[in-house]
Image (cartoon, rainbow, N blue to C red; front, top):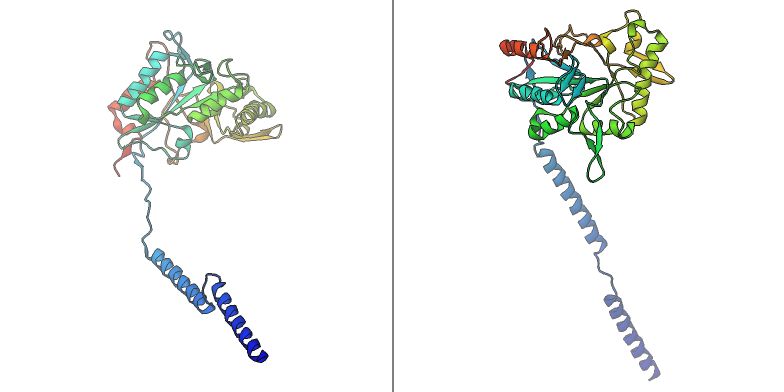
Length: 336
């Protein structure tokens, strides 16, 4: 009897154990089911890869720019500005500067940067002609900062930069470009630090160029003086504009050094190396495109925007009028 009772209890325990094990199973698959799932995933990945390989890739074709390669480009040269009438041949009024921009826009010119020119990346609409703006000496009339109502620093509307910003708001397709060739002894008025003035221009898309530390006459300078005059400006801008590299130079007085021209191109001052990609003259002709084998980037001509009321041969409007009469003289964009 006891034996029967013991066998019965053991049977009940076995049944309870079996049921407990079945109910306590974790969700999942058997090893065979898991292997099948892995194989299925691998097949899906392989199929997806094949589909990706067979899908046509989107091909982006860069826009091609063709120009009248026999034409030339005006690199316009400005100096001082005034709110009154022009007082001398180097000074232009803000009103006349705005009229310059209007004339250029209406006659199909569009602004490009000096580095756009150097890199042969001048992109303007079909039928339009690129023009480069340059400004020598870093005068207050060219650009200076004033404090806005909110306390921020902005370009004074009564400055060349202020005029260009206004024109750009009215005609954004004209572009906002220009290179300011500064001296190391001071530039752009007294408001704001050097860093603030430089950074404002750079943030707007303008470029900074070298006009030597003291506006030196290179023909009377030694090797050491040449390197110092150029190197001081390069170092100053790099220190005040987050490492900005100055690699363009406008010759003071338009005078070079026949004997030491190599040091104007490249050299070193107090551990600061410099290398100028272009050296600009004072005048007095439009420049050849960089694609022309005869271009000389170490003696690149500019066209002076003269103040005063007297028309002078080879100044800005003298060339503009001749280009309008002879369109083949322009480096304009052709139909593709």
